Image (cartoon, helix red, strand yellow):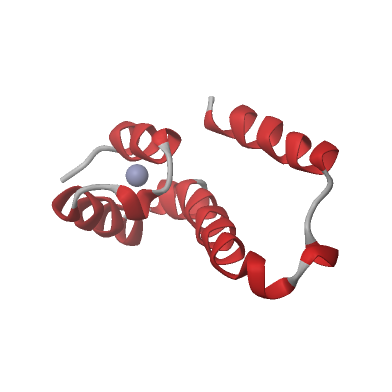
Length: 84
Ligand SMILES: [Zn+2]
């Protein structure tokens, strides 16, 4: 079973869906059972899910829904800060 620290490190590296299947399964099991991770790391996973869904549908949404480069940089900075 992964520890809270291992879960956090794995989430900080990037999208948890890109992890190897066994590691992703361990992460999901840990987060489903650990009250600490449910409160903190689950939010990171939800953010990653939302970002992935947005990327997948960005083209369908058209150019009017695209973020400005300034807004994109603010998001990148917020993500970097959250991953520290
Ligand atoms: Zn935990």
